[in-house]
Length: 251
Image 1 (cartoon, one colour):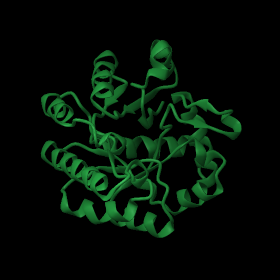
Image 2 (cartoon, rainbow, N blue to C red; image 1 turned 120 degrees about the vertical axis):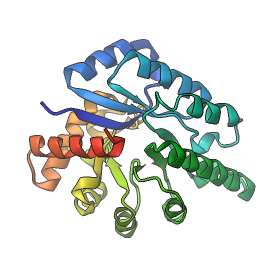
Image 3 (cartoon, one colour; image 1 turned 90 degrees about the vertical axis):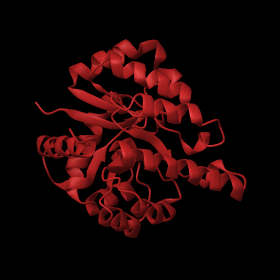
Image 4 (spheres, rainbow, N blue to C red; image 1 turned 120 degrees about the horizontal axis):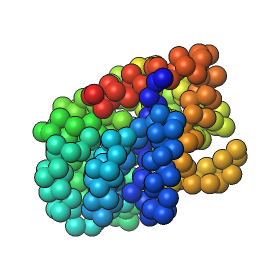
């Protein structure tokens, strides 16, 4: 049986705290591993603890663009101190909606570049938040030798997807792909060896997901829907995704 991967989920979020043992048990049952990403120092510490509790968790720690104005030195130190334990650096990136001035945007970019430098130094994959900033990120990435880059919840257009493929980036698709025709079209245009799946939990999704916070158990539905879009069987796509996930994580 193949392992399936949720390549971007915030299991450190407080909304999961009361039933984490149930989530970890579910992951065992459905043969799933998860890249648990962080937002700030507090969530990074929780993520590290989750990684110690279960070998099904790949801990990613980093500074989300929303948190770029917070004190960042402690989390950068945390990355260095736990370089052997962490699987990657994330969630990092850029997002204009979290800034009110050019100065704040510059701060975001400074923190983003600092973390890309760390990923290059430590040879770690990165999970990138790129809402409405893809073109800017495409200009920045070639300056760093970070080979395993995930543009999580890819939300660009067809040209931007092609640019992502040309740069060798992975792109991930989540529960919204189950009912979004636009996302399904993008999925068909992506290189098959660069496709990953995620939930971005605890984000809530509509339609068949009933606005419930995302669970790792959504992943089989995402894979099933993607397999129909791509014209392959569930098992065939599961094998592809397992290899892609291992390639991204360098395992």
